[in-house]
Image (cartoon, rainbow, N blue to C red; front, top):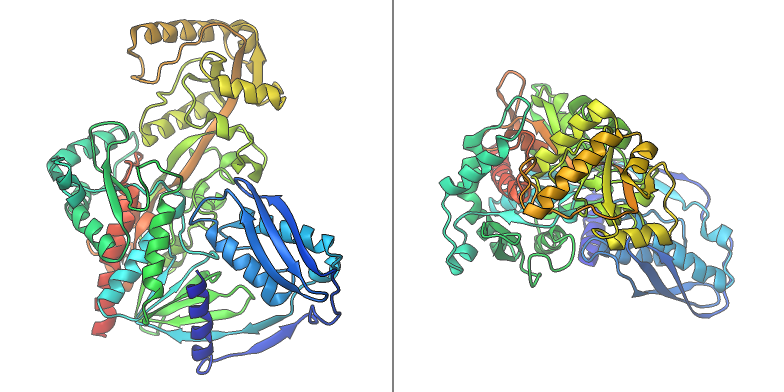
Length: 614
């Protein structure tokens, strides 16, 4: 990451010489009054998203000299951006009024809070340390052959592919670090007939995989706009896509079958197993960015969202207009644009437009997609007449609870308990609705239907089936008869939650019979944990999404199509932004990261060829 920062500084110094600039200054300097500290080294810690972050801060009598991160349990390759950038920013500005890394906000705030504690211990003037920094706004203009908007896995592979084709690439990223939603994923990439599969003697052809894919996708209930031939073509390229990643220093291991024999999923080579650690997608991002950082014809601007695709008088694309963190503009002149901005899970307005079945009160912050996924690529492309899949859906991830803010993400909330631990899920009437082992799509369909019909869903369990959950609930006094309910009998539980006692008790009895036989003939669930002796617990639950399905319509080379079906000259797209062609309501595990890789490769190469031909 330091190399990226150095690259940006160097690029800025070079490019600003020829930039069309206008500079304005705001606010007095924060250093107009000298600081005074009691010299020494002080330690402090503050809570991050997954763990406390402990720091050691060394002071002279007038300056913060050094900040060390002593301990933390934050997620590797996700938190790194904050762990590196926030201490550097504090030291450079001698201030606590620095911006958080927008995609790593909790870790950023933990570092700032811990350093603030240390400053207070050293006798520093906190008011002065938190005074707004002086702002200097400089509009800037740079040029490239291809500009890539968004730097998740799709943007990274698009940049790689465009560079391979000989193009100069400028990337702009809305967040303070690369990764998008990909870095929060497990990092599993579907491939058929890969070198890894051949090495272990696993034999599956494209037809075999397509049989599986079609069986999954056919469980959708809304009208189907998927292009199965496009999916087949992607699967045919999948082994080559993995080789592309490995040739660009993004190591691939596997295959894995998630405990089964269907070994099509590949994972980062930095792992010792498929489930070694968390957020394996972050490993792909880190490796990809390390490769890009070394390329002379590549530069990247963070905290710089694109706001407009620029065109000339003839409607030909000429680049993008971006807004920098200080409010000034960055204009990237380019002959081709690749949009890789992700979906819209973090936009209430677009969720309402494309996914009206999704419970609106749970749109934010109940998504594990990047919080920068607000549909920017769709909105910009639509202004040029781009066609979109209007009938969208969401990629269901898990079951969640605890409405009321970002605290949902912390490990000490109910979400850390229930997630995939549910085994008996009912609607407001007490009717069992959900096979917890089902694919993401069928689960989301069942949720939407039950929410529409009855307005509430419950996960029900006992200490026999979920002892850790009971211990947590009781230790933290979470029973409130609003979200978490406890009762000595099923009839009492039904009364408290508003369910029908006869329906609930009959459903529990029938389910327990399935548990005894080991076969669920109603829903086909394989995780069968009986509900025997009370007390009985119920948690009011809703769904958490990891992304969206729909987006822009594209050609075979991922050129964006207009509403009349014609390709928009110079405009390409990749990743989640175009996944409506590949999924209807059912997201198939591993195919999202394959789509990011494959579509990025295609779009980057096509964009480069277009730009270099001009």
